[in-house]
Image 1 (tube, one colour):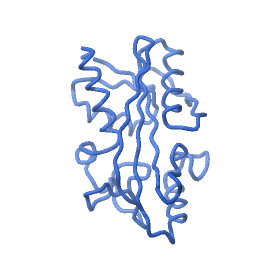
Image 2 (tube, rainbow, N blue to C red; image 1 turned 135 degrees about the vertical axis):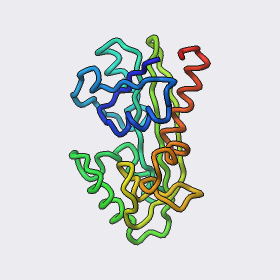
Image 3 (cartoon, one colour; image 1 turned 60 degrees about the horizontal axis):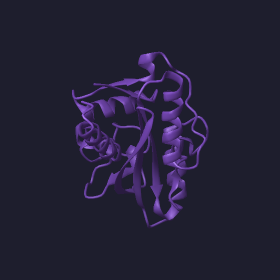
Image 4 (cartoon, rainbow, N blue to C red; image 1 turned 90 degrees about the vertical axis):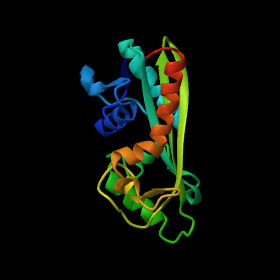
Length: 194
């Protein structure tokens, strides 16, 4: 079965394709020739995921899903949260975002954080939401060359490696996105959409 993922982020598309293996084929917006920015104007991950999925569904009339992910740092009142991609400005630069985050945590001993992903699936005009969470902590310097976003400074609970030090296979066993995708796949299988 083919699934349209409402994203132009090839890192995300590849990550999700690896989680799904050959059960489902992920099609990104690039694959259907859509390269414009999708609106992300809401104040929660749930609302943003829904806005993105509905925008693409209404434009192309194709069943699709979208996600929104945020890094929530406990001592920062769960910031950057919904603003994670643009934390240091509209240019969406991961290095700048990490620099700002580490600066804000410079004198903090509480480094607890979590990644949270919300997936909005629109199928047959109905919307379904799925959440994935991974708990962890923020270290005080970047480690690793894999992954993207905040991966070089996030260590998942129970591990001593950052997401950026893990192979994609390792990360996909425990990540927030993987947890949300597993719920999505379980739903699709229950509905016999395989």
